[in-house]
Image (cartoon, rainbow over all chains, first blue to last red; front, side, top):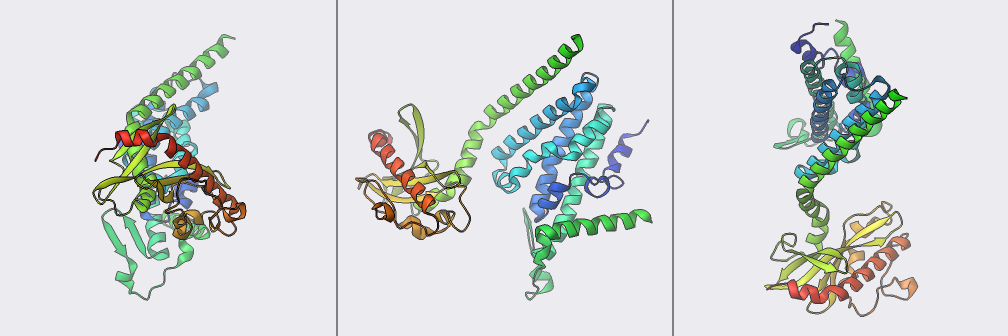
Length: 204
Length: 194
């Protein structure tokens, strides 16, 4: 039980990376990986909520009665998500428009509630912060990797602030993007391929 | 019984604190959010109908009282004169409310154009009210002396084919705006400078 900060942090980056190993939080993973900007944007908003809610729930873990714990967790998570949504409206409006309904959906993202119930409710604040940081950064990296792959090969571009990338620069103007990858079925296929790769790597 | 009361109290306290926190953040960000919404949602429609103005209609906006409400009136400078104003109204469309930005020329009392801000209309049908400039161009130069109507109702506006409800909704929104314009024109003239 006496795990260190570093151990709790690194598990979220690989061994227990949310979408590919815990197989949680798949809905935004499928829907928001059409472009790198959306994927990373969602990852950052998500990490924010995860850290704050883990901290608060860990601080209040002895105060919340077992019978109403889920109600209390949801109240906490929903409050932080709404605050993040308001902040995005005030300071990052174009991103808010692109992520649309998926920001409020962070409330019911299984990862947030899952970490609250499985970890923050039973561990000290510092370890909960480590857990949240690891899971959040891992999720962002996962979304980023999947989004980069889908966007580069499915649309031939890479949208991100300060990066102006077009695959035609690399593979020539005659390259026709594999549009299937940026559509809904392609999302499932890509996710499946990623899970396959992760399992193969894990087996070694 | 005491246990139930304790559970009830804890959840109530959580909800109360949550409500307080949300109200506070909302108040703190309200002004910035308003500017962002104006820039990104109403901005594109405004830029379209007040194209060619030498000022920024969003920063040059007035708050004009209309009865008990306050409406944001955006002003456009053309030929060094502040002769065009625009504000947003809603019309009842097929899938919900349509947000319509209507511009009036205060010198000639004519419509200077309309733009669509938000809507829930069907893509390819009613949504063409936003995507097709030719539909909206019909509203340019119309005088405010009689209500606008679609041709099937005896008016001069050609409705979008396959989107009669949307077209009627746009007309009713425009008529609404004409009524408001007539009501507040004197207030606008009082507040407008230059």
